[in-house]
Image (cartoon, rainbow, N blue to C red; front, side, top):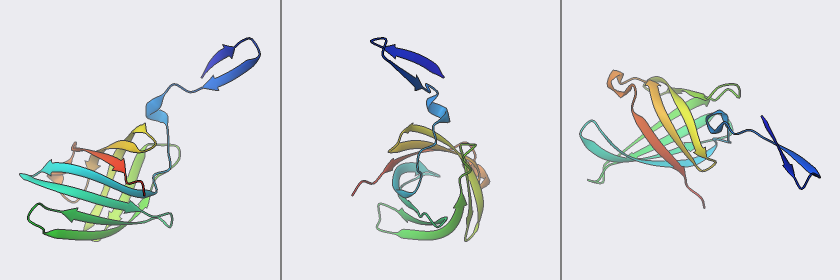
Amino acid sequence: MKKILFSGLLTVLLNFTVSAQHFNITGTWVADVYEHGSSCRITWTIFRDNSSFYVFSFPNGWQVTSYGVWEYPADENILYEIFEDGAGAGYVEWVNRDYFILTILFNQNAGDKGIKRHYRRMIP
């Protein structure tokens, strides 16, 4: 924490640790990725009831969908998720309230560890 004085009248406490920010992760997010030799758009909807829905859209028009349940503890920046075909966890690095980078820690595909996906919020 750092104190900043404005005109000697107002003291504002600011936390300058961007990586420690913990914004509301619910909503619909999009990441354009190139993984495993193929480009794909991931549309990820994270619901308040701790469920989630994915749509993986490929350039040839093919789509794959998946459902999951998630947990994002307030005291850490790791999102945990159980999917239809496995489980995973990713480190969430917030850039701002509408953009974060997810680094995959593990999931059902062992080769995904360390992959970074840049998600931006879809704003209606």
